[in-house]
Image (tube, rainbow, N blue to C red; front, side):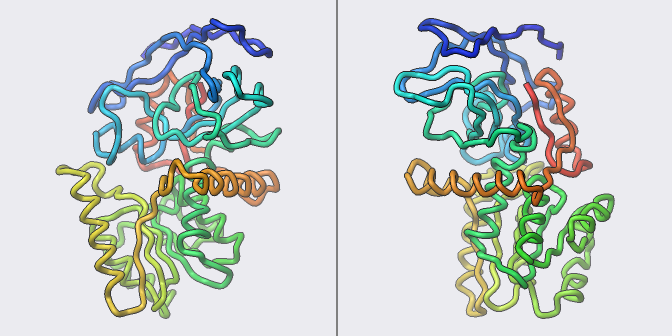
Length: 357
């Protein structure tokens, strides 16, 4: 994939009516290998009422895009489309009715469309990024950070002195979840490949090999009374094992099905099956609970937007005061998308791979 030399022309003032932006974006044309992702150049016109144009400075590669590349993400758009679940950037044009946002840095949860030099967004979806924050570091705290915060504090409501198990503690959500939990005085047990165990220890987590056939036994050895909450992004056989590690009153929170990303069969059927399994587990008379976390729950409602604003503002505060240390595995330009996607899917990195258009 060649390096683009097309650079959009921008000013520090609101563009006059009819001003156009020449943009570049990554297109997922169908089920392809990373090398099959395409670069597309097109013209973007000025925004409409209640909209802004954001010049993208950072967009991440998460589990969602890896699943979408294989057509295994429930609810993904029809091919072709522009991936990119979240972004951080600067507002460079505003539509009628939008005030005081020009040249402000913002973040947004987009689900798709973020892998581009510029995007059009509704103003109500924007999150504020404080002055002085590195856009790539802020990007790690959009979908991954909000997910981690809500898993810990809104869904499981874990507090000081409790014990949690984080599967994939080296991943984008897992690293932030671990840091947030340790900051809250929570004991963290984390699964990851042995190559990442030293880093987990440095973050205050007790590491375990995710591929250990006796994983449950080894966790019971260090937490004989059980776990207060397990955060499971694996699905499949891991669900019952994770549930069995809970103490009475404990909660299993599933938030992905990574075990099925390279599988076959309908992801919708797998997802429905997981929800049914979690419902059945909760009905068991043992005082334990199980649920599925969806970041989009309640989307479109004022309470959803308020929750996003509140949680992201707290994450930005913790980033600014040094409580959170973003783990950025690598930074790539858009025309390096094949290499970026390959690295993100390699399972060898600690933290998140970031695209910086």
